[in-house]
Structure formats: C-alpha cells, structure tokens
Amino acid sequence: MAKPRVLLADDHSLVLEGFRRILEDQCELVGMVEDGRALLEMAQKVEPDIVILDVSMPLLNGIDAATQLQKLQPSVKVIFVTMHADVDYVRSAFEAGASGYLLK
Image (cartoon, rainbow, N blue to C red; front, side):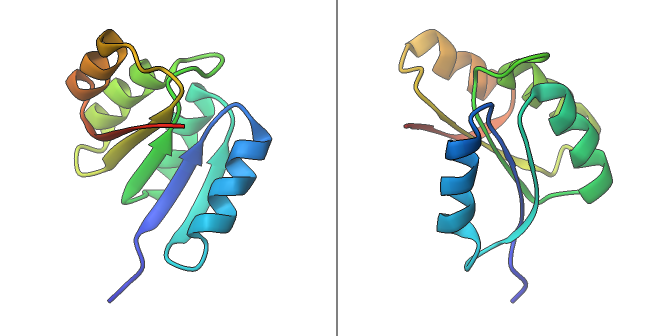
C-alpha cells in the first residue's frame, strides 16, 4: 500500500520539524510551508492526499486556506493541529472542510 502524501503547513519551523520527524516513516512528506498562500501554491504542485495545518498563519489563515484548497482539490483531507480550542474555530474549520481538528 502506498504511503499517504502529506503536506505540512505551520508558521513555526520548530513545529514543522517536529511533525516531519513524527511522520516521515509512515508518510511521504511532499512539502512544508509556513503560510497559507504558500500552502495553496505548494498543494497545486504536489497534489497531497492530506494537509496538516494550523489555524493561525501569515498571509492567509489556515481556515481560509482550507476553504480555498477544498475548492481546488476536494479530495484532499485537511487536518488542523492548532492551539485554538475555541468552539468557533472548531466550527469554522469543519465548515471549511476539515476531516479532523487536534489541539497542540
């Protein structure tokens, strides 16, 4: 079975590196980006199966990026990993097409 193609997006390089180390054996990491616009650009180039992203990112926040990504690539699974526990963020994430929402 092929490994899932994963794109990581978080504005903290330490978090990206941590996810890379955790996931690199189980997944094919196809990219790491630090803002929402770069996420959309990279996703179009690498066509990931899964995007793991944060809510708070520069240039385009994660929720808006996920909304646009779902329009461009509706089969991509989006999983938020964030510090935002507020129910409004959770609701917005699922409305944007999230498959999961985890707290850091």
